[in-house]
Image 1 (cartoon, rainbow, N blue to C red):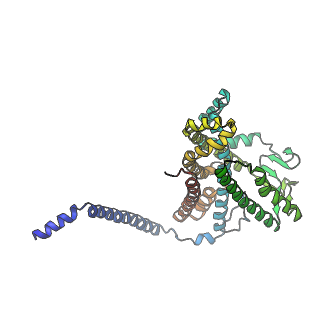
Image 2 (image 1 turned 180 degrees about the vertical axis):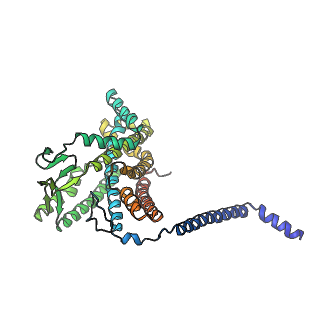
Image 3 (image 1 turned 120 degrees about the vertical axis):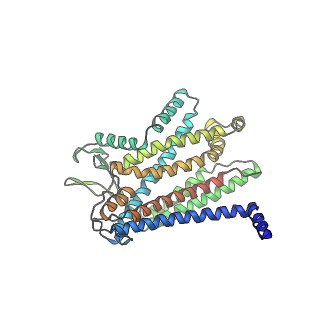
Length: 392
């Protein structure tokens, strides 16, 4: 008995075995907690007579959605509402990320400008918009657009008889792509691939000989010139549908609602403040010797910024920028404040109110945002790995 007690004591005093036991107990406790929580939840659902399952996705939605990138009507299913919400969320997130990146990069560079006025204006922009809650900014821009837009169709602001602006949105020509346009797009992709290999070739040549070659015109010809030639040879395989007044509204063309514009504007302006600070921190992290070396080689400030400073600064700036892209995507769910039909407003809002199956709907909504965030993280982490400084 004493030998068994000693064996057990030695067994439990082993750090590796003890650590494994603690981890195993923790995992079992976590699984039991979630099992008990879900079991209790489903018991309560059954006791209240609430239906479960995903059969509601095939039911008719019974309501209209003002903006949809796919065909939709009130007779469409709740699953179609789910798809419409996802696409609208992706659209406003994509537009917001593009504009936030451009604005943030420019403001971040301006923040360090030697021009006193420019630097102060950039700093004022950051301090102003960073410290106002994003929800208030969304509502503010929406009301600004609503107040300043003409109310009636006949009073719409007119830009070259192509773009019309009123309280219902921005009406503009809609491109209609013919099948042959796919060939033009393939040549565009081929041009991007060609540009990549040409750039790689001349970079290798520069490293070997020290001779630098300007590849701007090569890239311009491959990426834009070649597809443009194919475009005209195929007879311009793209048509346009123009907005025209019919009755009390416009018919034809495409419409960007004030809700979409206000949301994209607010998300871009707000997120750009944090991206600007990340860019500023990245630029300041570049060793001053690198900047002096660039100037000593005869590079102008613009050339040294483009060729020496920014490539190194982005290595530092990309990780926090990733976080801001994720925040922008998740902040798009605040669209419900101005009735933009995103995933939360349409599916986790209207559909949930109609069918009452909160568990299934909320889980689906959370999984969508999780998938989008993981995809953005994956793509930008790959970019970050490519740009990171390799260890010596």
